Image (cartoon, rainbow, N blue to C red; front, top):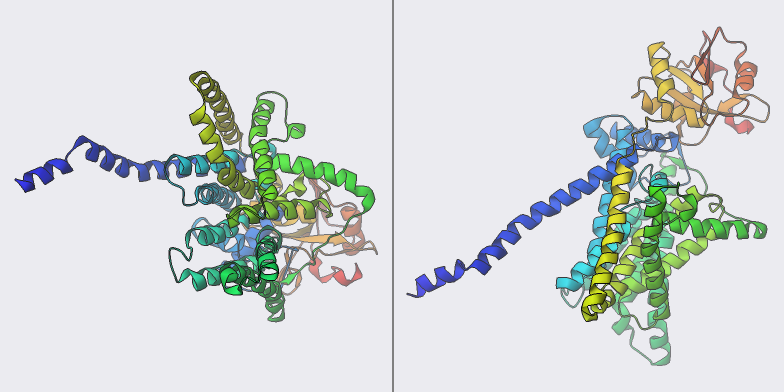
Length: 548
């Protein structure tokens, strides 16, 4: 009789429904993630890939073929050596060389950011509160403004660096000493490893994670230790997290210099500095850059439906600003370490950007790309539950109004997502040139930076074009930025043409080519490009970059 009762209980309608929900939830989640990935991929393809992204793809190809330290490479001031480069190498190992590596990588990265932000905003909250936190954070990020595609959904521009930052904070938030005793030493170790790894590839993590963590922990710990005689052991855990981050900063700074000393890549110095006279302009650019990240830059929206989407996105930007003000106002009282550190990180990142030389135009917003996921998480953790409580306490009429407002805003965000994905794909920069060179059997040559690596990638590697620039003496010399020194060795390559003109042309390159190599045997003009061809190996006459 007991057996029959137990089996009957197992088969109750409520139990069946719970099992059904448990069965379809993973499938729905997978479909949602796949849908987001596809939409971000399509939006990424709407912007032409330039030589910046092409350079990273070519470096990943070199690593894939065994050049793990990138010997002979002169890279930019940010290497992405431990962030996007391994990702690109993995994609290339499956799909081969091409612009789709960047588009797929960007979609993958942004999808991860949305998911990680939602998980971190949720924290350990369950039920309606947990869902409200996660949905608010994901909703703020879900639909990048079309004009922000080049910043958030294209070449590596610090956006991907936020992925390991969010992973680090998920570990700190979920693996706590009150749940696992081993967390007291495992979590600081994880922070050390993740931050060191990230710092090697992109030092922006100093502003978005390491410095804010150290600063907040000191603010929370020092007053108690000094004034109340609090024992260090009571703050040991947070202090150990800050110490691990600080040590990671030092090792991450030293690692690229060690790699260079071992014969690996040589990194360009980071340029900084500005003038007091430029601060007014830079403050205005910074304001627009923040709006751009949250899809709310009304100053950069085209008339029509896009302008409507942008104005609706102002809701998300306002929520983040409110959450930031609340978090900063309660900096000493917030028990939530994530909230305090993210608030300080946003202030440090935006403030540093405003006083830097990067805040000259809207594309400089890439330097503060992490503000988007950090702000979304902050809004989710600070505002979601108060907003949920407000709705639950509202009367029937208020609920109808709030519901209608929510539907309009959600429709605007989802409409933005669909609108971005519906844009026609753009071929890689210099794709016409690459096709023309292949068709005419010209496979090795020289061009300005913006025509060089992008043409190599657009041709699928069938044409190799190396970057040059004009020296003060008027001759062409190798361009020491995102280039492989071996590409200029006459014994290894036979460059026979120089490309002038085209999009973003290098000034005076045609006259400099004539001065350096003499008159060409043939000159072709195609689609705005001028292609000069010689019957000699031009690399033997190329000037030395030390002349610059």
